[in-house]
Image (cartoon, rainbow, N blue to C red; front, side, top):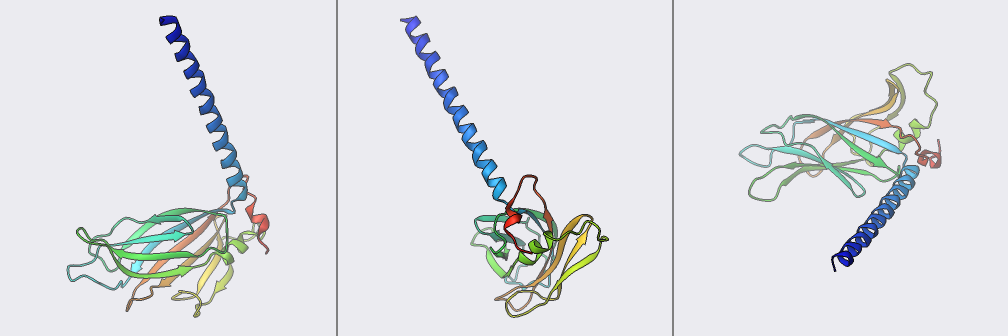
Length: 204
């Protein structure tokens, strides 16, 4: 009887081991395909908020939520400030240059739903197209393109895409919508991924 139980335990051990190996291999193959399809990584540095609209007489506790597709990241909460300084970097995997980014500022509440303090959108296709250029011989600080504010974007002022310290970067000031005032300042920087081939799909 004891011998039979021992054999059964051994068979179960080998079975679980094989299943585990198969799952790991499946995960590795899926990860490899995903990396190949990616364009790269985008670091969104949420720098600061400027003159945010107060929705609460007791003061605001703002944080920023940034979303693109199914990816959603947020900053920390700042206490009682309409000009908060975050200086936080949020990193996103990019597989489609045409999916917009939506940014929304919220006032954190302890006992009821967090309240919106305005929202805005920005697009990254111009930055991704700049990544395709050969900039290796350009000096740091070279401006590649100027994006002009218009009715189709949320820009509060002209936005420069530029080459700095071996990276394509962009400074953005966004005017928040559905509030009487408020802006959010961002700094975008592009990070290349070894093995990613998604940029080959992007036309210059």
